[in-house]
Length: 333
Image 1 (cartoon, rainbow, N blue to C red):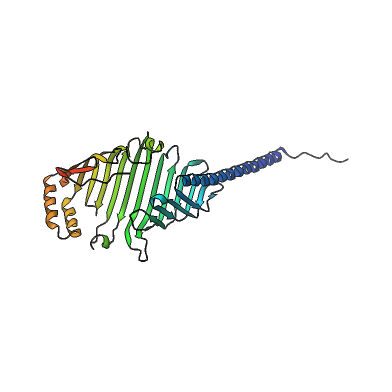
Image 2 (cartoon, one colour):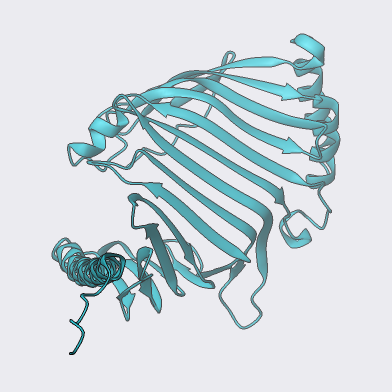
């Protein structure tokens, strides 16, 4: 008499269903990822076409989605941005961007050098760097935050001899939107200028920094306005540091009228003016008497810790330093 065939154990069936569910989930996820990747490539091509209609040439050579399975991003073999009508062109190397699938709004990217830069009225330039990285927290109509960091940057004239214009150890720029306004900050450290640009004098290490708010700047851009005209804000800091012991700082509220003329009430604070004067004498030999006169006038102003603060008023684009009316500033675009 034969034995009845026993049914598979329940645990085996559960394992089989679990395995099938995992395979189905992976298949659906993969299909979804490649669908989104295809849409990303389509949207990139569409955005480039829209820019072309506005007279802007944007290039992303070999555009393709990348990053499966846990990331998604756009890769380009070469990049370019040009405004032929204005004589502006920037061409750079490969672009690699990525976002985590679970956080697609946080995008990181890096761009390879070198870059060729053409600007109206400026000799052709070339820029290179050890690394150029960017981070964006996307939102509409503008990103919530955006940052760029460049390490070991080098700017040179694009010619057979390629003379160096400047080098910098670290360059950073940051932007964030806050209740319709835009906060901007930037730093440039380890700036070195060649002796050919400084009358043969070797300058101490230089650093630049800036921090400003453009009131309602996000709303200004969201409305499609690309001009600086009509904006207002506060310059919290625009500083030049020379060797860590001397420098100058500019602060104050500002605005730009509809004609592009700057208006503002600024304060220039000098740190260690005697050292600044000594440096000026090295850069401008033969002007020692003028520099000494200016130093005496600045010293008479006093100031905390020997740092004179000089009021500078700019009205309709014309700056006034004390009682001295200076040359008008160029109108802003």
